[in-house]
Length: 459
Ligand code: UDX
Image (cartoon, rainbow, N blue to C red; front, top):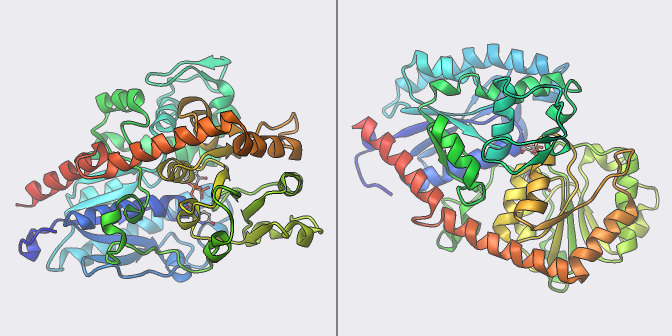
């Protein structure tokens, strides 16, 4: 860490969209910046700050709050996504303005605002304080490119072609596109949220993407021609990727410590590579039919499993649940990274949220992809056909992945030569991911450049 006087340390205000899939990568990126000598203030919404435990990592890492207008309940208290986004823009602008006023009078005022692309209005507030802005893209660059084309209206919507070629991307079928485009019109609020990410991007001083050059080289190169893009991922906790930090509690820790249940003791008793880990992330909601098929598939596999079933999904489990749990552990939440890096885990049944995808890649765990909606569909395509670390659980004409399919995928992964190949590929990507964020890796260099630019501007 730099040993310069305090007023020479650049100070970044980091503002994620207030859901787990967005806070996690921005928190990890913040920890990387902290490690490189940057002071961080991470901003939560008031509603989130009531439900999560914030650990003060370091005196140069502080937490502050702004209001999304729903101080009790956040997004779940809003009538719909449009109301939430509109209210957040209005109330968030006012409360961020107040926060920036407060921070300008401290002995180390803010030098740069790093904001989630889902909150483009932050640019207006930051520019009022003449602050440079870095927009943080939480999703894959492939997905960003597709959404950017939709924003620019360079794509005909609804999609008319069955096969579509976009710059930097392999030929995609329309059904590989994010659900809000492929099923255009079904979720206009979310479509707006995803395309509006790019409404202020021309004013960004930096565009930071939670991916690495090595994962998506062609599309990253294309985007670098139009944006001041720096790939800085995978934003998976540095303590897992960089052994030197493992014992350094200063950079460890999470702000989501509540409600997670330890699975490690249970995993410790299981043979290497024997456990199927099943999780659909923090938001996806599965239909009761799908949960029953999954339960049946897991039971018929006769393999150990850990299944994350959030409280909101618990009521959908079949009644003979206790019989099921004989070979399995069903918990409402776990420390996913601890589980994924445990040697007993053999494969990961996932919805392919971008964080889960990056975590599987970074920890060398092969995947059974069952995407639900949004970017997960496109991520699944890359998992199977580009990085070749997984197999797709294909849905039937009713959109349900049947128990036989799930059982077949698990067997293929755990018992066949093809499964072995995927495991080998996963291990290859693990080392690629590690190299990207390790010293002098592509993402590490980009982060260092970003830090140098901030430091130069400060002097
Ligand atoms: C959402 C979207 O669904 C996703 O597609 C988008 O790319 C980011 O925002 P989410 O559905 O929650 O995220 O999925 P994902 O991106 O995979 O993030 C889930 C996070 O929760 C991961 O970091 C994962 O490690 C963590 N998690 C999940 C836990 O820590 N414990 C669990 O039990 C389950």
